[in-house]
Amino acid sequence: MFKTTVKNLLEEALTERSDLFLIEFSVNQENHIKIIVDGDKGLLVEDCMFISRAIEHNIDREEHDFSLEVMSAGATAPLVHKRQYKKHVGRVLDVKTDSDKIEGKLAEATDTHILLEWKVREPKPIGKGKVTVRKKANIAYEDILEAKVMIKF
Image (cartoon, rainbow, N blue to C red):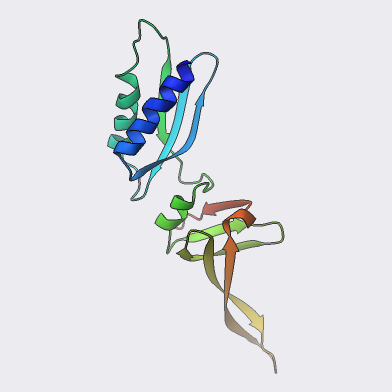
């Protein structure tokens, strides 16, 4: 009952702010609410406060004892939602599939797949030395086991 109330309030808030989307939602036995959200253009502290207030201000504390934690998916957290890929186009991702592990620039994110591009040094087909070769891979979302944004300094 309590979890359903919280979920409904959360869904209302996300409907009002269509630029925000849910990554994770849980309510444990002690009524600790944990919400992880992200945004199409990033996430500000004010966005987390908006979600927090939408829930906190609509539940009677006299009736329910609860704690609430609203946060963003961390910079090193794996991408789990298609919308996250779209906002990271142009950045370098580390993508694991059943058969491969690829680090490449996210060139495109569609509704069905991502396109990674990267360069590798390979031996020349004829003669000595190496040549730089551009590689590309279309990877369907369902084939991605894990994808993380690589933080470069």
